[in-house]
Length: 309
Image 1 (spheres, helix red, strand yellow):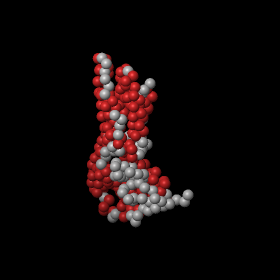
Image 2: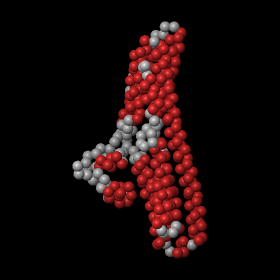
Image 3: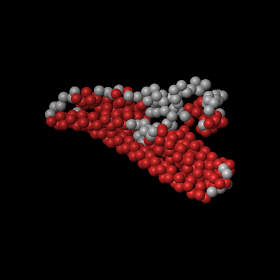
Image 4: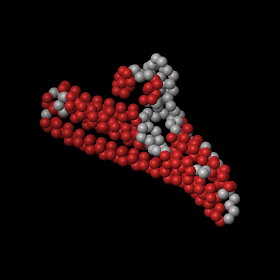
């Protein structure tokens, strides 16, 4: 099948990521994998429709694209610095000027390091929180099933319904589709609550088991709703833009006063890759159910194995 080139617009040359895609003549299929989420109306000539997200809205918060753009901006700043070193008059590069610029750069570098460290810490905390919530939720589902099992035959239908519903919850949670992000993933649920309330206990033991089942099911539904409503990244785009500008300024000053040789260019290249890699890790951990770094679903599948046994 012949590759169909996407329309990149007249400003593609100003965007390093789009310019690279234009140069390599990426077809629409590959571009769909590289940049799967687009703005309203952004389609290519092959008829590819952008993936819908958040009830008809779209996002450009794709970690790979943002990391590549961040690298292009940062490393581009280093190249601009090397170029300015060649074209600026000699008196602009005096020792006094270098001292002032280096002090200013040190201030920006300190702020950037603090922002990066806080973002990494926040993303890791969010990732661990989701992991703990999933594990605890899986344990509560097993405990609910055991309570219903101890209740006796009147709760068998509820146990079967619980297993079927939990199977669909796992599919919804780890599915990269509209169903996982839709409010139906929270509201469209079996009437397990009403069925538990409808149980008619025969004795104190069954009354205690019913009360325990009601409490466990309420905790499970609350945790599930929180996970579904908080599963998306929460890093403001403006913060990423400001961080990119800061890093670009830092690397521009690096290139401005660095020797012009291959070793310097290589070092600046590796440092820019490291900085953009940190941003990539932050965005990946902030979206723990999609991408390359995801939460393990093993606890949920283990819990599913024990349900209705």
